[in-house]
Length: 79
Image (tube, rainbow, N blue to C red; front, side):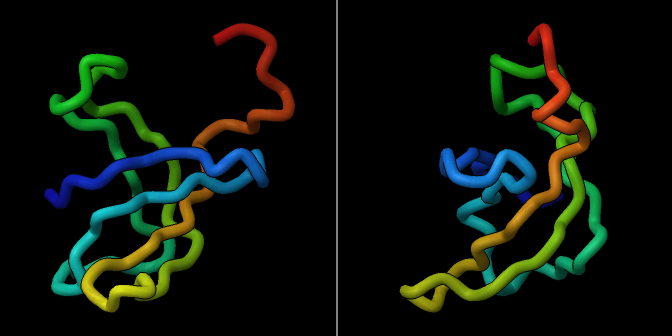
């Protein structure tokens, strides 16, 4: 039930970053990340990946979450 921004930093195709997750959020490694109705780019309810790790950001207010994608980007031929 927590909304954040999922993006790729262009470095590792096997990791995405989930940003703007408040420290008050109850998250754990292995939790599933699912698309929401906020974005017009993706349908609601798709599994985007799972939480691989997380840490507090430099400002100390939010988590920066590393997400393992639900698909292998090395094997995609068509998007």
